[in-house]
Length: 153
Image (cartoon, rainbow, N blue to C red; front, side):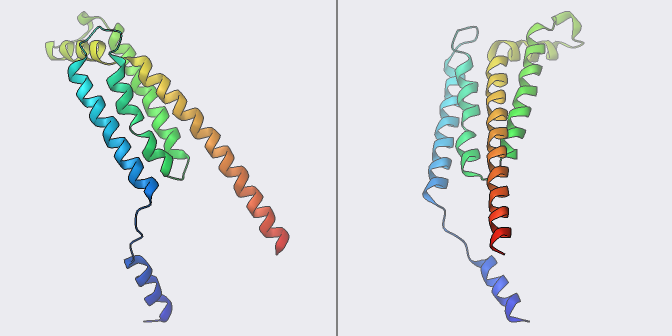
């Protein structure tokens, strides 16, 4: 084996300690998820605050996305949340008579009563917009670094 291969294997075996930002992100996400999940059992349906559990569960992903460098996960997260929001909106306005089985009616009623579509859509739009802004910033910084590298070479 060559010396380069040995060094490569050693680098892969070394584990970098988690930074404080990663630990803080993980803990804050877990706290938000537990709070959102707990509130889902406390807040009754058809109240003005039924959106809070979903909102807490959704923003629980933000600390994890924040410490992850690429911008595309923000865009994927946002687009998928907007799609889920539209599905929830359809479930809200879909008549019970259009569903073939009673189980589907029960599911539709649960989705309409316990999940606010606008929470999902607005969170998704915000994440998508932020993802595009972050992507543009990263591209600009990358272009500047490339120009500086080419200028020095």
